[in-house]
Length: 507
Picture 1 (spheres, rainbow, N blue to C red):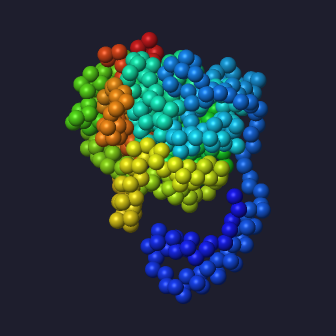
Picture 2 (picture 1 turned 90 degrees about the horizontal axis):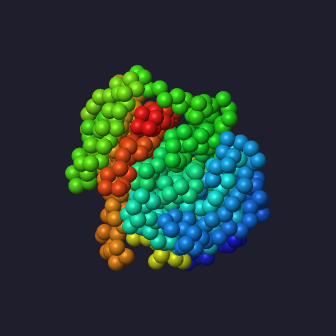
Picture 3 (picture 1 turned 90 degrees about the vertical axis):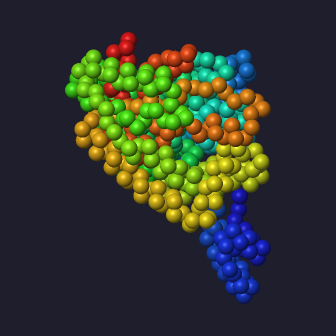
């Protein structure tokens, strides 16, 4: 790629896109003036771009056959060996396919990016390898991570490991299915509305959306700067805590981490807090997170309520709290998400802008080419989000995005006030169990609706940044049920300690 002088037609197209009234005289002047600006961009072409180093050797890898991948949960299999020793020695880890692994193809669930190969490792990948873990491959994710089901990836639907023909949840569908199906020990997921916790709930595994900024997002494709999270997925709370030990901490690249200490800088070990002791812990069941009209299933509500009261067996105090504003969390999320995601996908090319840190320009180039040349391959959900987001952005000048961000402060205050009388909030992770995958001939309305129905209880905490953990708490009709534990910002250790204690209580 090399910068070239804009022609008059290029500037006219830019003026039309920006809805600027530019006279012929002005356009002629701007064309001449652009020659002076061009030199700066040509100089940028000559300068070498700094990139995080790729520390560990790797070769090849492959797309697995259907026999090797019965859940259709792998996008790419490989074996990248990390350090000879460390806390993750002997552990295999799957990486969600919106996270860069150098030399391994990445499609973010979409044919739009097919053929793109990153040249950097995400910070979480380097940290896993530094800790002795093995990267076993890239896990399938939903197209552009815009689905809470597991039917929107262009590689086909991912199967639920507990019940074939049912959704694994999304968008970290492959990550949850591979952990739940015992194919890897651990996985990295990304979560903007529930994309770690929803599939963890439906696949019966632990999945943590950490406190906002705790885990660096460097080297991952973004959806919206203020709601992006990476986090651990595992079969036990102890393994989730172990992976968080490794990946948490500032990396110096991600400005989401403004108040986060560097990794290994005296930060508490999450693993060491798992004592099984919850004596005196105050757990509050959020009334408004149950009985969602048209969504909640009674067996899910009952299982979660019963599970919450099991903490009393270890000396915790369990009560019920009313938080009416919780029901508005999804509206606030949509106000932020629809416009914000649209800006990041186009023109932000998977990275967005106006933040300091490392921008993966090769990923941005792949997005720009893919969206321009293969827009017909965008999923129906992606097209829907971009159209609605662009409409509200253009028609109302960003008013609703800004108002939603302002209301996010009120939403956070509501939860924080509840935390003055409770140490944890709890509720169903998803109002319903996994549902059957849509039929191959399902229409657009069904496919899109089934992508957006799961996140009423999870998305508010992407907006507020509070840590929240899915805890498997039962099985109904052969399908897992998940309980969500939510803690104060920065108190991820408390959430994990309670999740581990619940495991011990139920055996």
